[in-house]
Length: 292
Image (cartoon, rainbow, N blue to C red):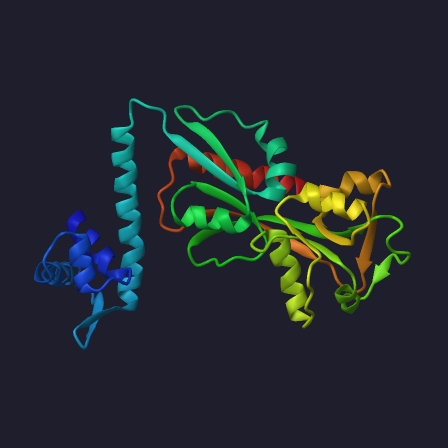
């Protein structure tokens, strides 16, 4: 079994036709087909079903694909290390906006710079963190709320609840029914943020549609609109807790409901992590659980 055979197998297994696979590998179709047959013979595994001159991956093939990706990723990491041995490689951590502004700076202040690596940060929406991991722009990612788990190795970092806040003179009531939310102007984060996705997941379950007055990708601007009396803002408790303690803003409870968001640490499934990335992952799991 060779690395070239694995490269050919992965190209075909990831949904490419024989034509596309052969073109991307600069090989003829017969050569690609022969390489697959040789690999099946060597491994003794039926990696593909032949249906009308097309290849469909088998269950054995799907498991073999996971191992093949790990092997190729490990080899790529080894090549990258060898090529970049004279320069400092980058270890990249991406984090959602809310967590990146509230929690991450406090946590990472006590993390020593890893030897032989340059640690960089990217703060963006949960959606962009997940997409960046898929495109291998980041080594690790921290997000909030629901997401498609299929591409990732996931570690839970706990939960954080969402607060409904407004100016003190905006509402007399301290509690609302969930059905009342459609009657008030709502101030929400942008679609794709963990806060927005967590809020909308509950609203969808209850069959309630809400049209926001404000959508923004900045917690600060959302908070300022709430303080100015424009409507009811939905924000992580960690963002508003200081203003709540000082009595500068009012929190409204939703009867019978607790809105929360799941905090998750993601790495790309099958991607080989460097020792520095493994150390960082363990550190983040430990420290986030102390404060979540």
